Image 1: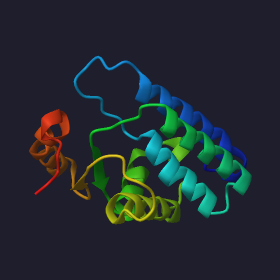
Image 2: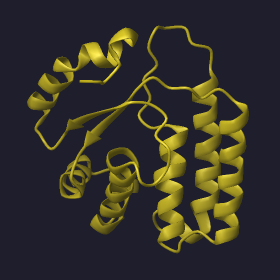
Image 3: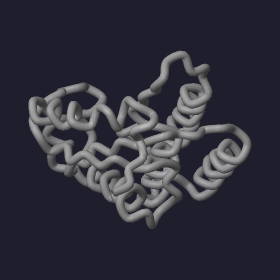
Image 4: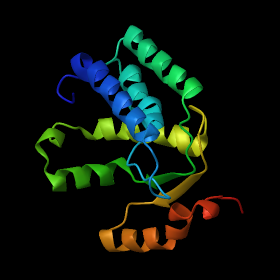
Length: 168
């Protein structure tokens, strides 16, 4: 997909939407379900980026959007909390380079910057699309030890349903 987004964007995002729908609708066996991404971020960030960058034709964008809208209207996708690990594109790029995954070697910094801007528009400014749940923002440009400390500090908000309200 990263090598030829125009060709593979619709294919990948259709599959992502399907797999995310499956994850969202699976029977809940534990009190908390954690997901790295959601059907919402797939649509509001990754599909939006493909379209805005000119790598997804409008007809494909409309079809994916119509499917997403139908899903949201007809299937319970309720979520309690969005945890946004707010990280600069530069930090993401450095981490990507350190991981050295073959499929990520072609991802440019400007792609990460575009994704970051869409997350910021959606979850911080609230100006892009509806936000389906309260958002807990954790600044994540830190080393692993500091991140573990921050996650531990927020553990009760993330893992305890009655503590997820993010008011004053």
